[in-house]
Image (cartoon, rainbow, N blue to C red; front, side):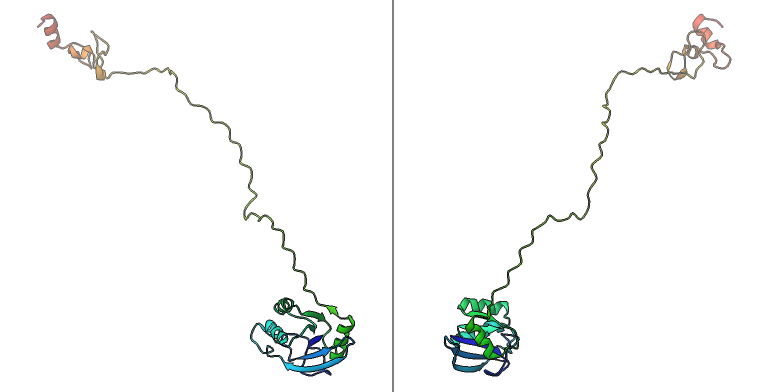
Length: 203
């Protein structure tokens, strides 16, 4: 099995680096079934100073080296996706663990296999709270009375300005009666001579 371990730049006598993609170097060892190291090498991590995408770059470097297992304290989500896509096994140990102990833990099976954290369950959508309200119920208004038309009774009063005497009591319009037309004086009430002469031939 070919195992890769992120280190601070040393070899077998170094310790496991606290990070994976930004580690200074990788220690790569070929180990047999009994945990014996057959061959080993240290390569510099070109992704340590990368501006972005360091995780996939570091994984690609190890893929090119034919690595079958990685031992690290933690990896980022991008690196984890690349490791899983490549079919590489990932084991987790505490940072600062000696490299030889980390290898023995993988061979003996005491190192835990790293699994991706469970994604949080989506929140149940809730109905939005109205910005205004609650609104009061609409009050019930009384029914308006129906309007209709019907016969009406009224009395009109009219008065004339004339004071007719004799032949009528103000039959004309504007208050002038027959008395006024016959020549009665409206102030004295006496007929004028012109009216008497016209009616009876007097004078």
